[in-house]
Length: 513
Image (tube, rainbow, N blue to C red; front, side, top):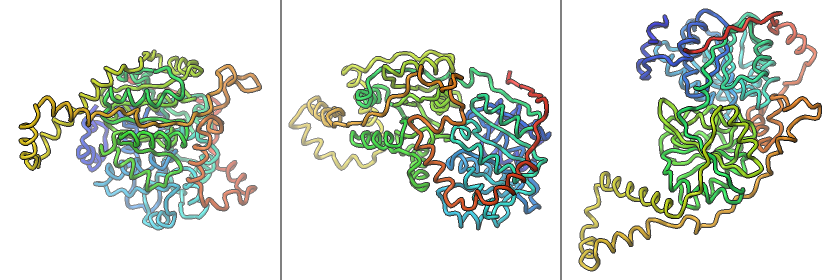
């Protein structure tokens, strides 16, 4: 479907053309008409499928630029996603002169307060910082017509349910709610029951969510073997742009230092880094100035980075949904991708659970032989030589030295000496990665009541990334003063303003054909 068939404002269509979009993605083709008619919508879509434009274009289309009120509120789980969403909406709404403002933790709140005084039509923010502005009376939502819950499953995992409920008590009862999520666990339906009215569900075919264009491998190894194995695999596969996932912040820091020590162009991101540092690292990675980005699940959530050729799961995720999020960052826009997951012997049950979710078996990958590693390193050196010859215009300065060496040695001798210095044994630089606490046995992961896996709302409170989740929320909710003040009045207002759930929900599921 062409964007011109969607009855959008001509100024938005010109922005779409400038952005290089030609045809709608499935989520856009089905969601935009529903949003424009005022329906509540649940959209199942991963990052990278065009969901920001799916909700952004109809919202921008409906904005009254003559009004000084905030007309749409978009709630995002992370600072990075809030920034990316704000930037994309700004570009799409630039010709219509729609003002879009982002608010998030870890940034100067005074600057945000000043920006909010410029009367943006759309505000994108993280839950804690939105609440902070509400309590400071610097964010007024009395005329909001549309609320978007973006990456809803991630916000549930991070424990933002109460924050979202509190925010929605400050939004007019009669508003449109749009909910987007990469996966659709039962808690998403509960959110819909509570805050949405007869939502239409736009569902992408499951095969599009299981990454058919990604070759998925696993390597069975002890924890202390994984780092050396991973770097040997780098030498064989030669990734152009790679994401490496670690379970904890400590793991990310150690992996980053280890890779840098062995000469790899790598940086890491996690919740303890300043926003400026995280933004700087992400810009370098997107611009191709980094080869490897090491990240925790929390720090990487919502990242929309094109060109990622490989995803390496140094630690297998405890939650199988996180695996879908991780590998979904490669194999985009019709391109193929590769994912490699390192699994210790006691984690094989987690791998099988992931395979059941994705309905695709991972292929075992044998550790590279010395011959394979040398061949991969040779290919890398040859590529470097080709690039240098093609782009270095100042090689003539070595002409005299080259002639002198060629008079004394054969070309073969000189090439062999060059290769011996260019190709180093990476494992000659020792790197020790501290072991992480093993994941709990699948047999012990049931709660005491015997009802199976714990409620998804509480998942962020346990597991290897418990502190990462809390750190992220602490940054986002810093200076959130007075939030618990006036509990009786706030509770009364919540009950008074909460959108009543219909006695019977009519969920209309639309799948792309």
